[in-house]
Image 1 (cartoon, rainbow, N blue to C red):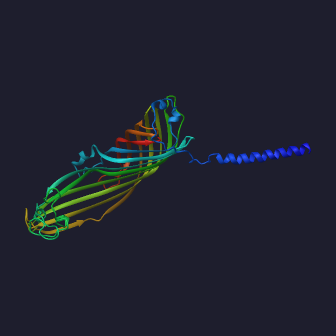
Image 2 (cartoon, helix red, strand yellow):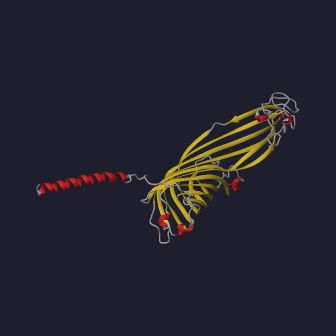
Image 3 (tube, helix red, strand yellow):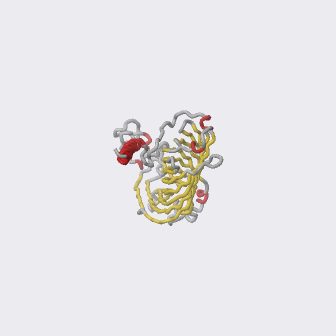
Length: 391
């Protein structure tokens, strides 16, 4: 066999062997998928301070999926008051009122120090009203007070009437006010009543640790903010008609203003760990287009009696309700969201934490009874407490 043939044979055998080994090696290599990483669900494995002290800041910055839940107690600034309609209502525009809500965050960070995060928060409240109880002309429904003598309710004296299966006199408008057992109007004037929600999604990056171990994670993303403000006023008057029959008038005015805001935001998350304690701070600045919807209505109930006091009979009841009025408007809102938290490393990946949050929505929010499109502001600030996993 010539040298040339021997050389070609050896090269062919080496190529075949290398190809087979390459196929085997490729089978054991990780798939080139940005979502392919070990989530490591050992969140509640014990952790010791010695382990944390020896750990570099870059190792304290976890990768993979993470999440957190926080309960929020925020205080909301009050809406403006139309001084022309309510000369004494200026005092209502000062101060803050409490509301409770929830904040949920979910995200992931890849080994290459980039990832995504999403945060949702919902706040129900505040629900601040002024309540005034007013005694009605007939004062007491004797049948409802004494109990039924007919129907399926059973028990009690009285003069008879129609009752439901629970022994209640109906219709409900003719009953005594629950817990007071007399005829009353419960007048309510809103001071600060609203609901708020927010959703954001961000692209995040993790920078190299600073000299003293702090780490900065810049972000850019999109954000939605929804704020619905409720307003109402109720008034009660007494008088007589042309036949000198006593009459009473209940007037109700109500409105709701919806603010649907969409836009972009820039921000950063900073954190630094010391043994079991982690300090963190978040800042987001956003610019949002606000699409506003306002709905208002009013109604009036006039009741005429044959006399005054217990036992008076209703001669007539007239309800007048105005047509609902709808208005739309567009505004532009600039604001910021600041958060600060202190976390305690309870287990390997589980943290208990508490902190504060402040959200400032600048001019451009429709609130209160003002029927014209307006650009009020809204400030929310208060405390938060919750937990985090793999954060």
